[in-house]
Length: 88
Image (tube, rainbow, N blue to C red):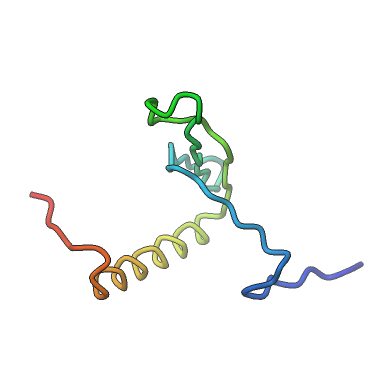
């Protein structure tokens, strides 16, 4: 049996996906399911879009990705790409 290797950064076989938005996030049977939305090019005025892909991951993977997203936001704020605002 062939063992799967983790993709190397920059590996030409790595698939990149683009989504216009995140729809609903569900917790079902111990997994997190993220509905990734794509805007219909024939109806761009409808911002909700449609589910183009669903990403399913373990709870731990979701928490790890959330932490990675928080770290990226901190870097973007530090580099002036985003500005930090408070919600009052």
